[in-house]
Image (cartoon, rainbow, N blue to C red; front, side):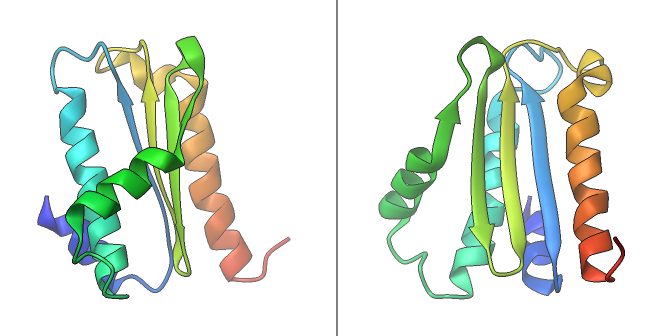
Length: 120
């Protein structure tokens, strides 16, 4: 879990998306939530804002946007990029790879790189 935090600390820029289905029976959704919080802690620790864990978790909760039956999306923006947690209601472990949300996450990651290098 700490590897994601290390990546957040060391990367110059990032566009991170954690995508998980609520109905995943192989890996519980809580695993992605823990990873997301670790990434946020790492990003905010650089600014000294993680002293109050309860306030940080509350801030993360306020950033969550419900999509009804589509699940939820939480985006944490930093000066180095965005960290997203996208929870889909359905998709189970392997099927989620074929969903549009997965393709959009990949597209955003490539777009963030092309913006950095000055490509159109």
